[in-house]
Length: 166
Image (cartoon, rainbow, N blue to C red; front, side, top):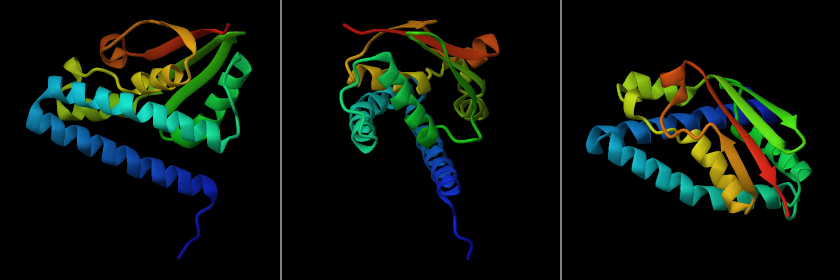
């Protein structure tokens, strides 16, 4: 049997988790419809974000996140864990207080499109990221403010966050 290095193991675990997430969404959609599925998906994300954030901060020994440098440090660490290679994305820091994500290939868009519900799907990906910021009590502004799927409506997807610290 082949041994997996840390990167291969992370990729495999992410693929398995994304499949679980997709199957959960599919079965909720089939049983409950898109509106209730969107509601449950976002509720699950809201309850996950504080737990996940606390674990990340502890695991990476970051301490209190009270500067943009610490946001970058935490996000860079989380990116290595939660964003597998098969997701087409680019993360940049266009300003001293800003983070931008550009998604070229979205697993959620592809999966929900195959399920036939993309026209009413409410993005959970950025909802999760914003849940991290909320759990850390970081003040931020997001552009654009979108609930539905931008990949579906615009053919591309991105978000830019600007942070402020007191």
